[in-house]
Length: 239
Length: 76
Image 1 (cartoon, rainbow over the protein chains, first blue to last red):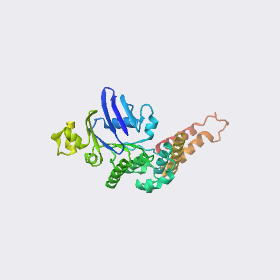
Image 2: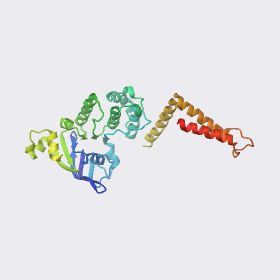
Image 3: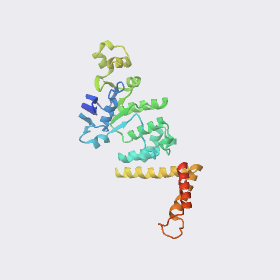
Image 4: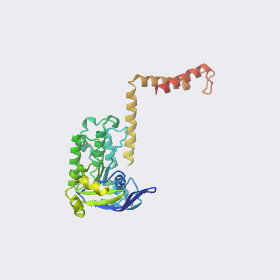
């Protein structure tokens, strides 16, 4: 469960996120969409505890991110759009390191299956410098899923993946949600959002302009009925 | 947490060392290592007339040392 109440974040005089409130229940996939500079990444980074909000509260799995950040971070995984890996750790060492961080005890048993799922078995001993961008992205996601988090935050999860990787990623997101994880997914790929998200949060200039299922958004804006999410998005954000 | 940090540091050190040793298969890195090792030998361990670490090397020796160092820098 992810609960956000009155989230506000400014960078100097620029308000990146203004009074944003929403919640994501277990099993839900919330699509976070908006034009560049809408505040999506700031929102995700605040949820992940990387950015400290200027105001508001964030609760992840019942833990307050401000008061109990370690407990909150133990139940979440944040997969950024740009994979950042350690230069001198191999693929399997990244997974072992993450397992130690999150005190995952059965990593040796899970490692072969996980490497196979990520299609990285042949690259288990490779350093990040020897991996393609898509492989790095898969490794980041593998590290994120290792401790079975109940809150998943994806920032542009399909960037750099090949068609097979895209299909697998979509399956992974759906599967994790089915198992009870609350998922927030930020993407410019509206067809992806339409395909796998149960609800949509449309942001513009740091503010919420629409939140709900596409049907709920259309109930509030009947003039947009029959149009695609792309049309709805462009109309609501005025872009 | 400490165990994870030690694992990260230890494995990074091992892999970085392996990587650098593997690079010695390329002649430019091997030559760099040899020249570097010679330079250090020349500077710190070579027998000196008059004895002692404080003994001043001959001008010719300094020229050779600077030449070796320059070669090392160029090869890196």
